[in-house]
Structure formats: structure tokens, C-alpha cells
Image 1 (tube, helix red, strand yellow):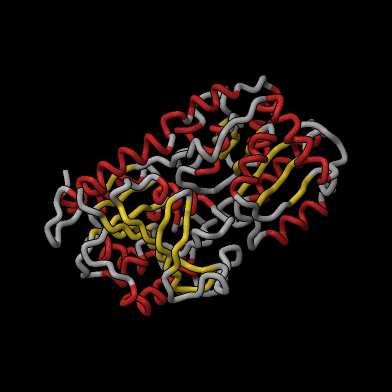
Image 2: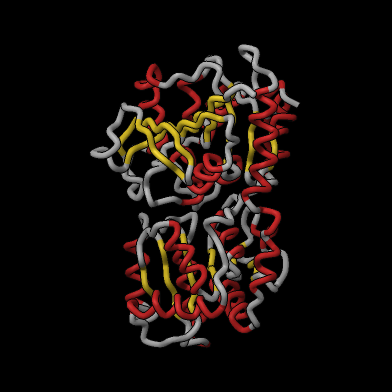
Length: 412
């Protein structure tokens, strides 16, 4: 079988320990690409001293050797006034000549970075990790495009016509996009988020107890009891203040409950002020962004993952938590209903209010924990299953049509 050139392009650093939801997606596609694929990655460098911008570097990601070309230096944990997606797209225009992309499969996770390759002889695959048609109009969206949605959709309409396959992680977005772009109807598909068995695993209860002691002891909580976990950016979309208000109510009935918050963001100052003002300092700890493997350890130590988002796609953190045997309480967003399908694995909160969220958490803490039920709930979303089907659909069908100019739109 002929070799297939594959380049993923996104403002992410695959060498960084900071992963995030899209980062997990990117690393999974790299890891599970067929052996006949020669994989490259074009992104940003969070360590320009080691990986200078504008040069190709040989790296290893998830056991897979690949070439890495950063076009921009960026700290992924800090937001700047000029959106990273815009700076990245402009940098791609600058370095486009250094990226050999003819007769190549290009994979994007946003539509904007496909602009520099418009009109080029390559197959383009687009993953969308939300429902832009709804998310941009959500009052809690921090995406800059939400101020100019018409301009975004004009750009999207122009660029998406060149995309051979569009995969979206929200099922309700599929009919909307198919209606918006009827000529692309058969190219637009739902794809679930996945979990990698090699990275995320549920430890035996005996090991979980020791791990919990190891992780919690340095935090010096005032009391020992149930442990809640929040993982996400401190931004309006994730609404950490809603969770804290729910936690405040919960503590009135369950003073033994503590909360660990992993993340950072523009709302961190407000989050810390609320914790201090409401007298929660003895029961809440903010750890900041953590390496992916460390987050998985916390998932094995906690009693419940709490999500208070205003909108989502199909959150990786939710899939991984359930795979680790950790029940989830979440607002009813995105594909949460697909994952929280029964009360054994958590609660789906219909109303995004402190009262409703605190009640859901209290109910989960009061019931016997069923780790096996949590794992069964996400068993269809193992990476090997999802990505094996994706690889056959994309790369191997692509290899079967090697003529110049052929694209995945021609594949069956």
C-alpha cells in the first residue's frame, strides 16, 4: 500500500504537558493513524528555545515518531487580546512555502487555518468541536468570533466548500450544518469523543484509597470527607462561579465535602475572590493547569466530577472520568445526555442553577458508587473503536484513489 502523507494543523504544541480536550483529540489521531501514514504536525511552540519557530523538528508523540513544524511561539495557558487562531493563520501564510502539502491529507480543528491552503492540491478534513451556529450566540461565549458571527459564517461558507469531510462532535449540529450547506450534505458527519485505554484507567479501590491520601494530604483540607473535582478553564463557558455557588449551598448540608479545581483562566481572580468572601478557603483548592496524567490520577481519587458549563461539545474530560469509574454531575449541554444516560453514572441537571446543581451532586454522593456502570457507559467510545472506523473511512479509502487531485469527497 502506498504511503499517505498526513499533516495535522492547529495552534497546539504536541510536545507540551498541557493537553486539553482538543489536544487529546490531536494526540489520539496521531497515535492511531495507520502505519502507512507519514504523520507531521504544524502548530505552535511553547518552548521556542528547544523547538524554534520556522524549523522542522523530529519528535515523538504517544509512541509515534513524526515531524513538527511550529509557526508561532505561544503560551497556551494565557489568552492575549489578539486571538491565537488569527495569529496562527497569519503565521501559516508566512511559512506556507515550508510546508509541503500537495497530495497530502490536511487535518484541521478550526476552519480558519485552512485559509492559507485554499485552492491547493490536497485533501482537507475538518473537525469541529462544538456547534458554532449556537455557541457563538451564547451570552457566555468568550470566543472573539461571537462579536462578529456574520463575518465568521461568510468565511466558513467560503472555506468549507473545499473541505472533503466535516466531523462534528455535537449530533445536534449535523442537521443544522447539512441544512446550511446542502451541497456538502453527505460530507458532514457526527463523531464522538473517545478515551484511550492506554492513558486512562480505573485503579482498584485499594489503590484509589492510597492515591487519594497521597494527593489530598498536602492540600491540608480542614476536614476529610467527600471530594469533588472540577477540570476546565476558568472562563464564562465553563462557568466555575456557578459550581462554586452550588458548592456553597451543598456545604450547608454536607460540611464534609471538599472541592479541587484544576485549571486557570480570565475568571480566576473572581473565583478566588468568591472563595474568600464566602468563607470557602478551607474547603476549596485551586491547583492550576496540570499534566494530563496527573488529572487522571485525580479522577481516580475523587468522588464526583462536576461540570457547570454553559455549552459544550462532547467533553473529553467527561468521557475520561467515566472511564476511570468516576460519576459525573453536569449541566445539560452538548452530548452530556449521551454520556450520563442513567443515575448510576451521575446526574444531568436540567436547570443551570446553584440549587439544581447542588442537589444533583448531593444525590450522587449519597448513592453507592458503581464504577463498572460508569465504565460500561463509555465503552463504545474507546479510541481503538472510534479511530479504527475513522481511519478506514479516511486514509485507506484515500490510498485507494491515488490520482492527483482526488479528495476524500470521492471516497465511499
